[in-house]
Image 1 (tube, rainbow, N blue to C red):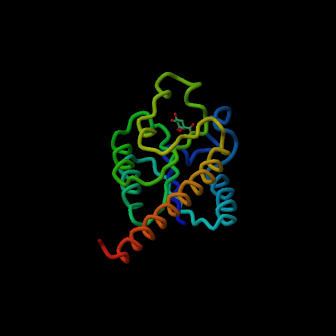
Image 2 (spheres, rainbow, N blue to C red; image 1 turned 120 degrees about the vertical axis):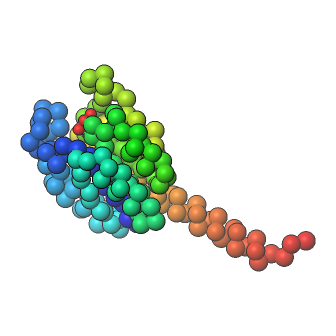
Image 3 (cartoon, rainbow, N blue to C red; image 1 turned 180 degrees about the horizontal axis):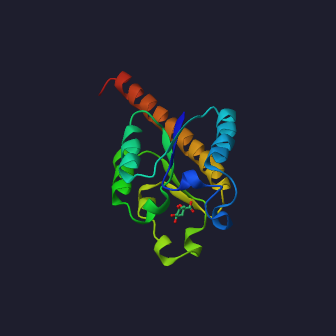
Amino acid sequence: MKIAVIQGPNLNMLGVREQNIYGPMSMEQIHEQMKATAAQNGVELEFFQSNLEGEIVDKVQECLGEIDGIIINPAAYSHTSIAIADALAAVALPTVEVHISNIYKREEFRKTSITAASSTGVITGFGPFGYHLALLSLTQIISEFKAMQEQQNAAAAQQEETPAN
Ligand code: DQA
């Protein structure tokens, strides 16, 4: 199972930026912790960070056919980017949106996530632990999805074998 972790603008500054909001952990430290959980669950992770909207759109598009699910923190683009929301809707992969802070507890402009509507679910306000929760929940969602697909394929194969009356 392959999962892409896509980090939006300024998340490369975690550990430095507004520690009172985002805490002391760097993005690299968060990724190291995720790698440990992923290894235990047989999940392969691919990490990507960009400060540019178009690069994030490109990355989401590249996931199609290559990746089973996406964990994304679009950061400030969550509140503004129809392009990222459209890209997520276009690839239609199981997706968990993560916010380190609780966006509902902050400024008005952060309370709406445009990209969230293209995600399976959203985790917000649990600090860096939110990425861990996202990994666990997405792994479960993808496993269930794959099991359902296998069941459907098996049922279709059986129908083909049974002669029509
Ligand atoms: C954030 C919340 C956004 O409003 C903000 O622009 C970020 C980080 C979070 O993880 O809490 O950069 O996505």
